[in-house]
Image (cartoon, helix red, strand yellow):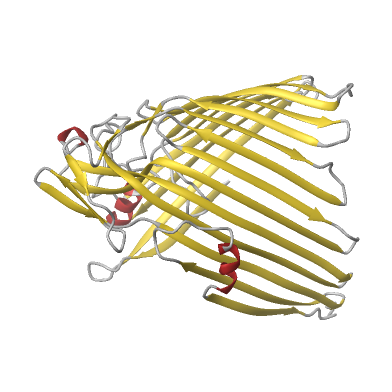
Length: 447
């Protein structure tokens, strides 16, 4: 597969120039199976090449996908005069897919200069990953279970500088009970590692280990009334923790109606939430202050779907999701030195920080230096919906009527969101769009 894209990038600086960027990418893959499909090997190799104005290439180098400006990265550097960039991706997977014992071994790589966002989606580069998965499954019906599976997986990642950015393992199980209910459970442990993006283009920073546990229960497939429930929690020695609840209910009162509700709840505290970067920092942190905070977050959402087929030719489909979330920031601090794991918390070690003022801003004093930190608290509500009527009044002739809503609002900072905010989202300001689309089939023939 090969793709070529050319696009213009507008920049509102320096004589309002329009910058042109050209992009080329390609990928080849292969798959080999043997022993009746019981074993599988898959490999792929791809490339990318982009070229354009130096300002466009500078933005690519400094983007969050790369952070070439990292001061302690000795294998990448920002080049202001660069006008082209190339990269590659590669992967190899080997699997056993039959029998009671199953396994997978995976290796992938994305070089720092790899870029395919013109034709796809790429969240980050500069990654080398490895993972293995070993599991045992029992498909013979037993005394208590119809079937079950137990396995363990291991994973790790590095950047092209050889820094171990993550590693861990997970134990998991899946089972189908005698009443055809299905359940799953997993326990994970992430080892201490080193982050190359936590400081958003700053130096490397060590991170603590993390423990997690998750589980769920689901009704039998094919039931007219279906439901599922899952929950999970995680914690880390730095004070980060999370808790989540998810549910789903699907009702099919007849062959023409389907209704589903999917509520979710999240509560977490992230002790290493990046806030901003300031000058006049310690020499051990390359002269900058990389500022972090604890953020307490709560999130509620409720997805709703209703599908009705009045006749084979007249249907209604509705999707709606009210959403509410809040985040409260506290316990600000900065990275004291490259590869530190703990923060230099403001209010200790010769520093002080004021209480939030009327708009949530704080002032930090560190010796003769002082600087202000704006409020980062948020309290958001949103409501998005999409309703579609489809009417095929004659074969090949169809009318669509679409009603879309996109509403959002933000309340005063410092407030924790409550479940009732989901209903408040319905009355928030926003946009409403009604669209009509019709297609008409002309019975024309040409001989």
